[in-house]
Length: 512
Image 1 (cartoon, one colour):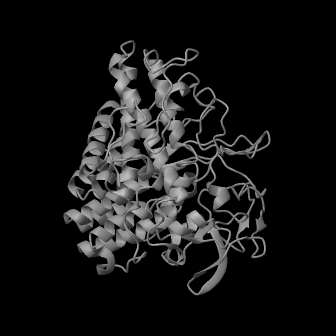
Image 2 (cartoon, helix red, strand yellow):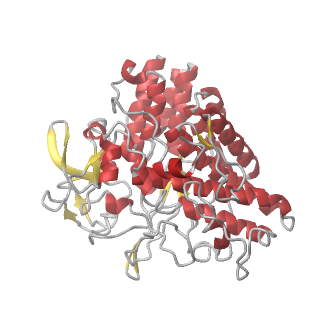
Image 3 (cartoon, one colour):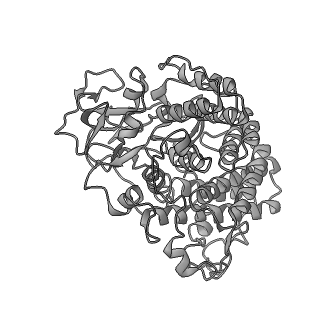
């Protein structure tokens, strides 16, 4: 599940809830829910208590953490479509290379299809929880928080869909029939539903949850701000984001990308997960067994709860490397360069600076070279890497993915201020990020909207590079005409929206 097993009785007890939701209908698949199985509870007999309702909620988190989404394919989908990554070499698998290199992928692209399937599975599970909530009366307070979390997660999934596909089917009730398909709804209607969900979630969720990893009021407001920006309403985005201003604090940069690392039974790192900068993060766990949930479901009390990010972007598989564009975005003295990128000659295995470590070599890095300021070297991402603790070749890891952190909130606020005509205020937010612990870059002064937008573009690159936000940034800025008025388009010719997956169009008669 989404919440860490060591925090929530090892993987959140959803054994009973898997009945519905592990077999629930995914829009892209014709799998009918079996309500006649006498050996298991059904959707009619279950969800009678607040605890049972939360079990259903936990299964939504498990899908979020699955291989279809944040566990693997989600970060590929965003990074391949953004401008911050390049191919690590011939080893990059064809579906991922297609996303990276082609203006638009084939409708049969497996990576794109995984994200579509995972999002609609989240939505159907959320719809079931929300629909059953009115019947739960034993713990009203807990029930309402559960509904707030379900709406937050449904909104997250719909934002992934609308931002990447545009017009998509809109389901707000659980699918109860293998033929219960819907046609595409206009993107405007999807945004209306997302905004409604997040507004309601913010009203129901607490500032601090009893269990780490669950959505909070701050997470709902931050995501609402992101959504409103993408929808073009910067004033509304600013209002939402200001709800979080001052409620979080920036921490040393690298503390946002580490976590638990285990070799066998020995835990060699614990990291700084759920720190004061974290607004919303997806929890992963390193069991020390080098396993990953290749079934992509994330289900079950003993399911592997690791993520493939460090493995995919590391020095052995080497599928993805930082792009030259990202490398050259950093100012010469910005320490975030070394915090974001490893290059040959840098030390790994320092155990967070407590050991001498060993130097990376060109021969020891199975990646294509890249170029920064005319210097060609082999480089990989340091963010979400476990190389400071282990280089054992195959190691799915337990580093939590920080989907929203406070630095992102500040930079979104800066963009909103630029858009509403207050560049000096935009500079204030940017400078808070530039002066963050361990960075201490000189402040910027901004006098015009274009100056402020250019500064936001730069700062988001060096602060958030490789964090799966660049793709939607490009889509937003392209729509505003900032390519080429402020910068050249980093992905010229790219089609903004994915095609509907072939698995959906072949099954859904209402989508052609």
